[in-house]
Length: 389
Image 1: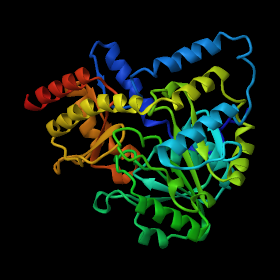
Image 2: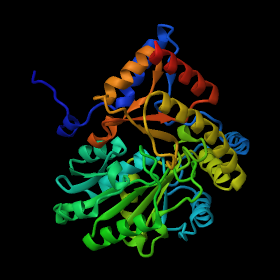
Image 3: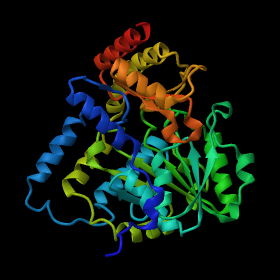
Image 4: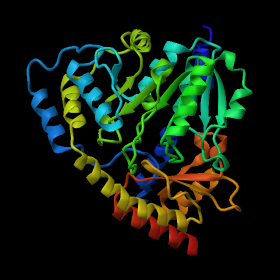
């Protein structure tokens, strides 16, 4: 019998760092070590009560359990369109400019499959969300990392970009407020990105899940004039509405792009659960009070996270937005992974090393705000004790 081997596309894809690391954390917890995890950006709070009530009521209906449209319910598309108009001042046609998704992560695959042939070039931020690279590898595209550095404000260096073989590049991933650095987008930056995409006929995919977290000026790339010609924007209810496990997201673009992406999506899934979609409609209609109360919680947590960063000897930009705090290691620390492992085993606190987001993330660490104030204070006390001892 011949040796069975996987597809070539698997060779360049590694197990997700958090998948591997959380197994280690689980083993330490099984030994009774009570690890405080400040690694994953998974909201720990509940969705709004009326959202859960809608889910429960609709799940009890006998007509709620059949297959649903690949393009989602009309009510959901309209709710997304109203949300965009209210939040960003962006007008979207719910009939043909919005496509609901079973999570943004799945949307990254749909977009990549719709636009990238094997060997096509794709621009991926360094540092950036690791899934941009792993999905690009899965579709056998050629990755061109583009540098984001602290010296350049974690924004693209367009002079560097212009030196790349842009005639081979079809897609560019962008993400502001940026994960992991928390850098917010200015209108000027978004305008430059749109102009770059139009100049070189490159599709700009803007991943925008953090714009409502600790951010007083949410922005959409679709605010920019003529952005729809080349831009796709993904958004999600995972962070903004504490609905990470519900897998409710969307993308918006021009009708032609939506049609191409739908060709992929309709061959991958069979629509979303109707009660989930109707509950999402309820979530999208929540008043500003919801966001204010959510951000009041994250503001308290952010204060404690900054104390932890300071105790670790890290420096950070206080203007960061989003669900994390990004800090620069002391100059004498050579490896973010070794630093985080040392904190894990000495203080029993798990924080994320920046190298997992790309080579430009080396020398940095990230703390998630998805832990209670009490846990953050406990983590701070443990770290102070471990460092002083």
